[in-house]
Length: 210
Length: 71
Image 1 (cartoon, rainbow over the protein chains, first blue to last red):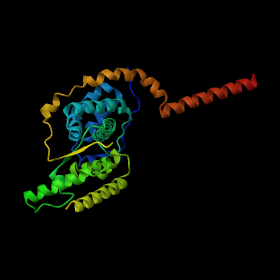
Image 2 (image 1 turned 90 degrees about the vertical axis):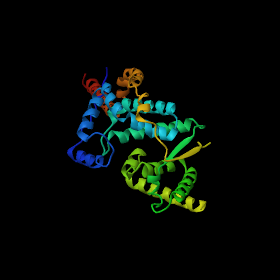
Image 3 (image 1 turned 30 degrees about the horizontal axis):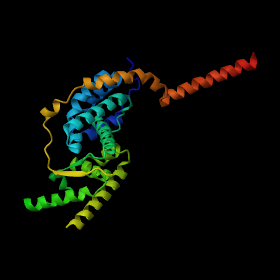
Image 4 (image 1 turned 60 degrees about the vertical axis):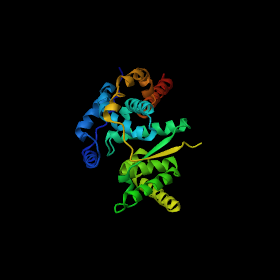
């Protein structure tokens, strides 16, 4: 069986930066553990099973939230891991866990799916905790809160798909700008600017809906 | 045409137990056989290998030129 020989070993500075970021991640593994698993998978794709075991549920939920169909989520999750397995030799640590790379592949798979299936419905999960970052409603009663969340869902429906993604990642999944930038291949500053531009647009839409 | 957008406020994710029934690594392994078959060929066109192949060709040309000039 052919195996890839391009194995990447992060230097100590990258390792330190990585561990700093992974402290804020919900990554179940520490760097050395994950690094070992990734290195094994890069040397022999049969060892990719461990990565699959650890991250399957997370990727499945990430996709399921956007398609709301278990069969489709299953297909897209398999596709994501299949592509990751084929390309594992190209993975390099740039300050993020391999989970960010998997989310990046999953996002591409989802975008391809929605581009191909024009009749498919794009689902957006709005979490009240995350909505707190968009407008402050801590002191409000349940009815007002619900009304605001309803208005938010109406406003979100008027955004473009890529704008919705930014709102989902930043406010409902609480990803860092650096990670958002990594997923959509733009700089951290650019991710920040784009997200705040969308937030401004969302606030304007909310103001019009009142 | 744009995909329709539906929003859900505080939805429930499927349970981990219900997700596990979809977990099957062997499913990924089957198409992998096809990938392995072409991996060697693909690697020939990768950036680093491409450079090495070009360097080798350049050396061969140089040797041919030397041989042609002196023999």
